[in-house]
Amino acid sequence: MTAVHKLQTYLSLVTALIACSASNQSCFSFDGLTYKLKPPACSMADIELRLRKNPTDVSALLDRAQAYLTAGECELAAQDYGVVIKHNPRMAKAYLGRSRALEMIGSHAQALLDIDQAIKLGDKNSLADALLQKTAVLKSLDRGAECPPLYEQLIASKGLGVGPSDILNLREQRAALYLRLKKPELALLDLEVCGAARPGSLDIFLNKGKAYALLNNPEKELEAYSNGIKQDHVTRSLNGDRLMADLYQARAKLYKKMGKLSLAEADLKKSLTNQKTLYKEIYEPDKSVDIFQKAR
Image (cartoon, rainbow, N blue to C red; front, side, top):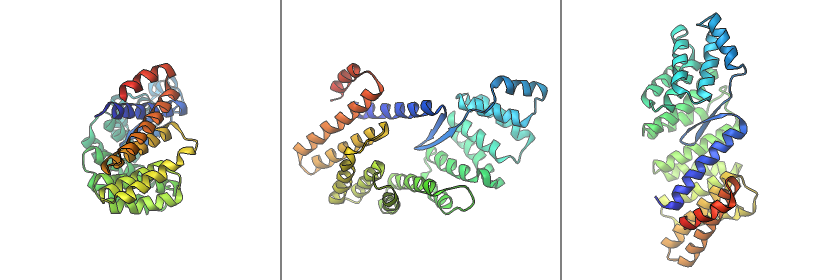
C-alpha cells in the first residue's frame, strides 16, 4: 500500500468520525453501510433507577443496551439484549440490537444467527433493518455472493419503510458489491438507474469507471472518470474531496496504462492537491505540507 493510499484510508476514517461527532450520534459502519443510533432520551442515571426498582424492566434494559451500544460498550450491550431476549424471546429488535453489538466485537457468525432469528420472527418494523444488516455481516464473512437476493427483497419491498432515496442507496450498495464479485454488467445496470437520479454523484462516476475497467473498455472507463472530474467546480463535502482525489488517481492509472505519461503525472498532482485540501480542512495547514511532501 502506497503512502498516498494509506493517507486516503486514514482520512476516510477521520471524515466518518467527524460526521458522527457533528450529529451527536454513534456510527456503526459495515462495509459502506452506516447505522446511526441516537442515545436514549433518558439519562443513564434514570435508567439505573428504573432497573433498581425492577431489574427485568424491558424498556429500561433496552434503553441501557442502546446507551452502551452508542458508547461503544458492545459487550455490555450484548448482555442487556440477552436478558431482554430471555424474557421476551419473540422481540425481533432485541435480536437485531444484540447482532449489532456482536458484529462490533467481531463475532460475525453469532451476529448472523441473531439476524436470521429477527428475520424469522417477521416483525415488519425491523425487517428492512435486519435484511440490510445481514448483507453487511455476510460481507464480513466473505459471503457477499449471498447478498443480491437480500438487496432485491429490500428494493422490491412494500410496507417496510424503504423510501425512494433508500432504494437508490441500496442500488449503489449492490453495484459496489457486483464490482467486488466481478460482475460489471450487473453493476452498470444499477449505476445507470442511480446516475439518472443523481447526476452529480462522484461515487457513481468512479464505480462506472471501475465497471468499464473490468469490461476492458478503456474508452468508456476514461469517459466515466472524466465526467466525474468535470464536477470539480461544484462545492463539495469532505467526502467529495476524497472522491475527487480518487477520480484523478484512477484516471492517472488509466493514462499510464495508455502510455500518456504527461497526462498521468498531471492527474496525480491534482489528486494530491485534493487530498491536501481535505487534510487542511481537518488539521492545521502547516502540518499538512510536510505529510504530503512525504506522500509524494
